Length: 639
Image (cartoon, rainbow, N blue to C red):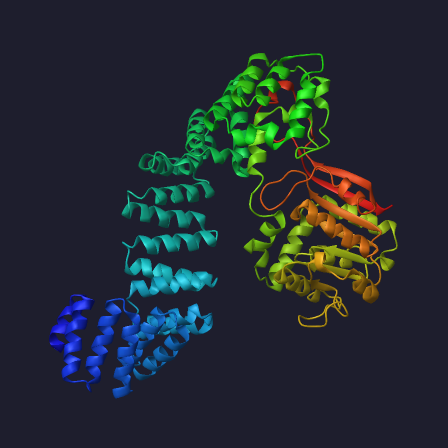
């Protein structure tokens, strides 16, 4: 009966094997090998609890059975009990020095437990014992990639591809690792080999097209993406990237065709940041090739492909202040073609608005003065009437908000802010930041110079990786004991400590675990929960609070509470830098003066950094183009 069970196991039929093995054990219950057979059959039948029990029975009869320890480890791993699995597999490895499979399972269990160095060692032992197993190399390479061991990961994946050149998964993993190492051209070559092995896989062709675009091989990218769209003709992502490839190759008409096709299949594409700018580049390319009339026709083709998008163009429901503002402008004489466009837009007919404008656009004709007025209230405050008359503006605004979470929740949950960083990486980032053009640095330096730097007490709210604090200490002459910082993310707090503690001066920063506030300059603290009086008792009042891209991370209610805490610290001045209009994790506000006034601060300085908020000429108003400043720098002082 045991022999019949082994025959069923050889044919990978777990349940029939169990039946025969149970009969064999019933006849001879003290044979450890029979219980071990039940364990093997249980694993094959996906009955891990039964398998674990059978292996324990075998080990009770014969504790030195290496395969039973290995099987028990495999069963416990299937049950999610990795601690027990590791113990069993380590015992198996000790008993059988040549068993590579138990070391493979041991490495995987150790990895799941976060015991990464031991996992790497176990994989190395398994590979030493079985150097020709490509799946083992692939698993090892995958784990090493997850652990950012780039050189070792690439070596393992290259070995897997050599041992099994027909493995699409191995080629794909190697391509991803090469891409992560910025070897984009090599990554594309590996992915091209994977495409040859799997010619019907449209997603592989698309990924190949992306890599080829990144490596500057736009002609080859267009060929790969054309094949991807042939395999999946209804995929807007493929058509979007193919449009970009055609534009890079100078094939403007093809680019417009595929761009509009992508919008028809996925009209949300137009509202994305990258897509918005591509639309701008595309209509500019059409205009350069065939004139401004052709550019307007291209814009109309895009709007036709997107459709009416009622959620974007129902101004009465979603942005009543904007509707009332445009309605009032339209009713004021003198009347002209832009008024007809606005009437169509307010009626929820954006394509008709574009057509009306195209029919009357005259090169060089100025914008009527009445449309130069700026809206003062509502979600579109800060924008002039001519900008609000552009239907593409509302497509962008529709994509600029993410329902369901506040901006601060989105900001806190983003994994990039939780990445651990070493001192060398932080120093290199600071050097790059210092070399880049950052207008706010000059504003901060000038402010400090106008006061006595040695007497200023400064709190950097949202200190991030510590670059601004380091700048104030090393470039502005502010004493280290007068610098304070906080951030919601512990990883960024630790990064700021690392950067400042690596400096040539003594930063007097506390180490993690010290008493909060008393000896701590940089600390993890949500300002909305601070005891402001306790801070002032321990450290004194603050002369300047700096807020670099912090206000954009709060909704209005949270921002008001935050500024209330700032005021309770006795703060005399606030230097605030933020975006006006933005995508992604932030809320852009045209002007923060009202928020600050509510807490007793008045604006003393306001600079707008970016593009001028004005059109070049009237016949460009209705194109998908960015007309708003990117950033505002403000200094607010206590009233």
